[in-house]
Amino acid sequence: RRTKRMRSTRNPIFCIEHRCLFLVKMTEDMCNRSSCYNLEFDVKEHDTNDPMSCTSLGSSAMSLRKVVEVCETRQEERLEYILVPKKQMIKGHTISESIDKERDESRSNKLSPALAHDEDQSKLSLRFRYASKVDLDVMNDLNEMHGEDRFELSLAWSDAGEMLHGKQRKKTKEERRDPKRTKLITEINEKEFGYNGMMNIVSGKCFRMNSINKSGVIKERVIPNPDPERKKETKFLSHEELKNEMNKPSKMWTEVGCEHGSIGTVYLEILEACGLPNMDAGGALGNKTDAFVCVIYEDNMVQTDVIDDKLSPMWMPWSQRAFSFHMKHSLSQVFISVNDFDLGLSSHDGIGRIAVNLNHFEQNTTYTLTYKIHPASNLQVREQLGSIKIRLRKVITDEKAHLLSSLKPMPRYHVNMHYPKTLPIANFTCYGMHNEAHYDIQLLRSYVNEILELKRFLFYAIGDGAKSLILWRGQVKVGNIYLPLHSAIAFFGGMHIVEKPHLLPGVFFLSIAWIMLASLSDRMYHPSPWHNTSNFFHYLQILLFGKTSKTPVTIRARENHDESEKFEANWEHRIKTDFDAAWKAWELQLEMDRIGNEDFNTEESKRASDPLAMALENLKPRLFPIQKRLQR
Image 1 (cartoon, rainbow, N blue to C red):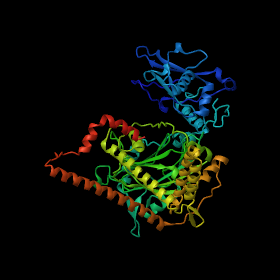
Image 2: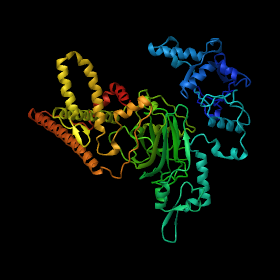
Image 3: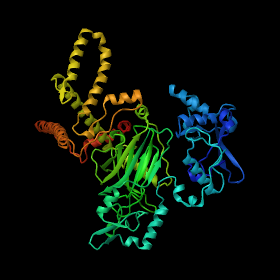
Image 4: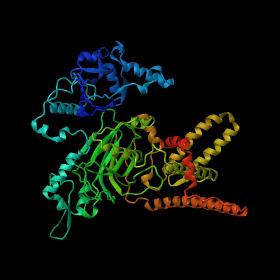
């Protein structure tokens, strides 16, 4: 089998339309003797002078045993293999295995000789996974679309590793006509969107956006379309009716990601966006922002329907707004951006974005959240460009695997897309408007201010902890009483160390765990129940038994609201007081410098630009590597 030809490029990127997706079928003999069978990949160049011949650019091979191991341990991971001349391929020892061995050895050494010029060599990137039922249906759809089995090699494996003998049943004509059966991604088709917009103009829908009933209530046309089950009732709705419909459970859910190796599921619904700026020209004529939302989670990207000419769009339950993502790592964040859809040569415009940390939420709990959106998250001074309202819920199927995955480094994800105009939107969703790959003084200052802010809160924690220990203040809540338990431990522990100083190294490491437990317990005593976290015994139960006995907690409306506001106000007052004191000290120092200059009859040359900015610009060669490290 072969892919379609890619013209005029040395770095081809293959998509489904290039027939790069293959279903590898294995017989029973292949399964039993998988090390004796190989998959060979040959990259060729089409000869323009002789259309019937091709020139080999390089080859690579891997055994079926290696394919099964990859599907078991490194499923859907991007693997790169060096292409070598076919005559250099080692008999009985595939190129992929030798390269993997050299890569493993290079982790302990600086670099293996075979990989010394790895960047200069031609490589082939591959991904493997067990075929699920959905995969088999998609492959059958692709084969039927092309009229032949172009995508089959020869027994596929299911998610459970069981062999599937025989072909799947042929679909009926009604199933083949249904476009949802072959819809692989939620990426917006620009041609389809433009055609639908033109048809709306021809049918007169765009000229009648509102209607007034007999009671004088203004009703708006439901965009992008009314409920298919209630077209007449939901064609025009008032603002309150739109709000009520929007808050109802979603009817259409899009499942995203691979279920194999999943440790949980994230359910996300995009409800509405409010107060968006107008990104289109001709606002006086009714041409306003055509909003859509892009969501990226791990290696998956989805998009909602486009809401035309609305600065406060709402997505209805029957529209494309609800997505379920399979979770593979507990530290993965959900990146959400609101964008303006543009037709033609102009690219889509990013409006604002957010990043949602799922570890702040309890599992099996539905959250309705409203976030302010900003064009960049890595700047201290940011402009608010509206807000977005979402509904979120996460379900953990394997709590122990979820907890242990936080100890592993985050894997590198690759997000695939179909249209070139989607790439800038994907970059904006993940990184924002500000480009961290270039040297920027404003960005560097934001990183420095962030470090100083962390330093200030660290001093707060150390100072408050020292005062609490020395003054024997209440630290651990027992019933309704706070007891100075940490002060007692520190007192008797100090007496023991004085008598037995040889225990000092062990006590030092024990004190690290003690400080971590104390900081964890301190977070649990926030007045607001929404800020509370799980205790140490919760995580210990998960490690020992694989699950926890923690039951859901019912939080009443506005529970401890006054105490929480008072707590936050005290923190803000404390920070403001310290900031004002530092500012006054800086102004006093400037005044003293000015007086000193007048006493010695010296003058400072005034410059039009900021001297600190000029100094930072001159230090660009040294500061740019530091900026790259800080962004990590």
